[in-house]
Image 1 (tube, helix red, strand yellow):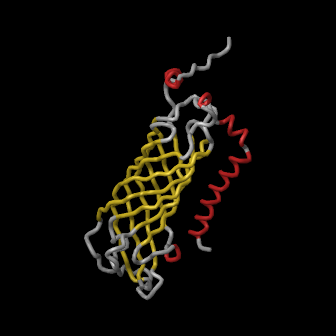
Image 2: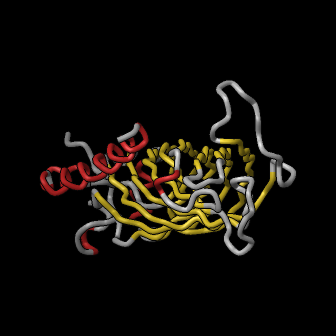
Length: 256
């Protein structure tokens, strides 16, 4: 098993651990879920993960040299079900052809996209009488949208000598821009009013066939997938009394 496989195994293990922890400590999470903060407003997010490409050079996991992915963005919660997500992601794609083509490709991609996020469960737990007090620990979601990628690929002989700069000719002018449609989903784990963690899997459909500097098939566009874990930070409202009034509940008063 190579290093990239270990990273993938670790990523899925962390997600599985979160799910088991939620079931094992349900009563503790019920107490932790009590909140006077409304499930709406701005959330800042940052993430890291792994990326793989699907192209003319590489059409399966086996030929991928798993690359890294880093993202930063913001989420605006409109209500407990719907949110809008704006995100910028930088990733590196790499693959080696497994046939006689003798090609290795590397591509650096900047992905800018806007997405709608839909929670498959209400963020609030319990009945309507308790919706302003308790929130769920784990909420699954799906997301999808549209954006563009700014990419710079290169390709070279797989068997080129070490420290050699031999490369294949560029098939077009780079850097280049193409459209992208990201789709996917994940699970958001809420640890407090401010901190959440969200493992997610996204697949990105692009409008270009040149992510690998190769266009052997005119009908097949190049795509890529990203598995990542994102940290979500929700800034606390400055006026807690005003926030409580917006929810229709009375702020807590200190006993004399």
